[in-house]
Amino acid sequence: MALSQENEARLLRLLDEREIHDVLVRYCRGVDRCDRELMASCYHDDAVDDHGNWQVSGAEAAQHIYDLVKPGSGSAMHFLGNVRIEVEGDSAFTESYLLAFRSSGTGERDTTRTRAVRFIDRFTRRDGAWRISERVVADEWNRVDEVVEVMADTGKFRYGSKDRDDPVYAIRRGPVARRPAGKT
Image 1 (tube, rainbow, N blue to C red):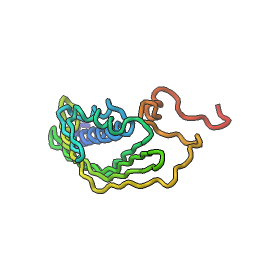
Image 2: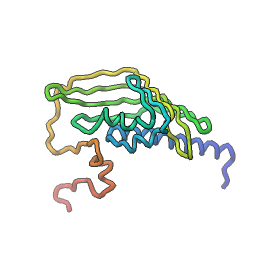
Image 3: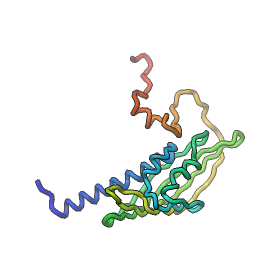
Image 4: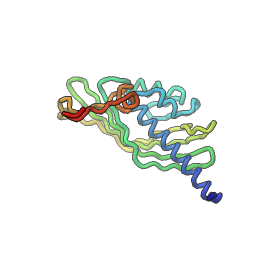
């Protein structure tokens, strides 16, 4: 069954939206896992990223962000919420709502920073690949809370890591799940 021109155009727009959404999700994983290569794959080299308190080119973005969140005791998590994608040919405009969490500890005082932001992006498709050409971060609110209690590490929970040892990478190398007690 052949698609009508209208349905073919709608299908192609949906594929474009899906590819753009994938870039947004890859960016979040890249930041949270300190994966420079993954972050770099989200930007055109001549892109501009204006986070408000810093501005860099796309070619510099991955290293700059890595230097801010590099592996260490603190952890981060980006939660991507509402995403609006408007495709216009080989350009697209997005508005993405995010909650970004970052924990840090000084030994005496542990804190969690929560930041509610919107990524306002211009994407362009070049050589068949959608990437960020311009990003402006609009802060809605942010706060730092002191952590009153930290759960003791009993070994029962598996924690993420900011490197290639994280389970999201490790599972591709082989079994990661622990076997239930008494099972082989």
